Length: 144
Image 1 (cartoon, rainbow, N blue to C red):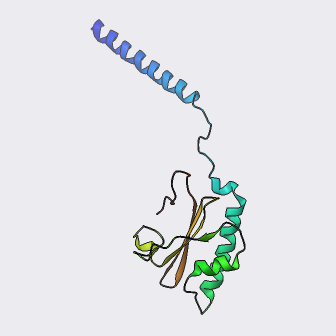
Image 2 (cartoon, helix red, strand yellow):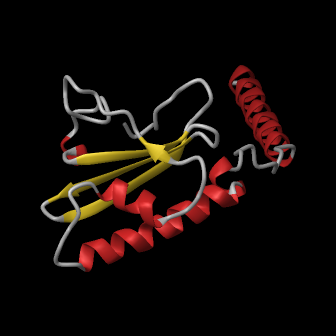
Image 3 (tube, rainbow, N blue to C red):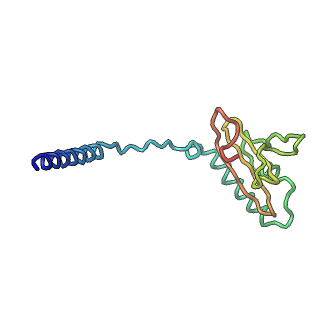
């Protein structure tokens, strides 16, 4: 019987020490936020371009005569240097390699200096605007 009480005592002490260890680990956790801030929020020229482009898209969306290439219209209306039409692949007739259905009827605007890429799609006469600042090792957005 004494062995049973000794075993139960050891088990209880082990449980208490385990809870103390867990409490100690929780109290020593760091509250530092390790997430990095997106470079999009620190780049004012990119945000300005997106704001102006979205206003232009809203104008074209509500007009009766929609342009055949909305990217060309946006670039002609917005005067911010460094932005150009993306490269059109003549063999596929597409600006991007993605074949996802959300990118049908797309056009592309790029600023290689800012690493800013904008894809505008026109699906069923509704414009969708995709924008990102890509990493220096890639030349495409994550969502492509």
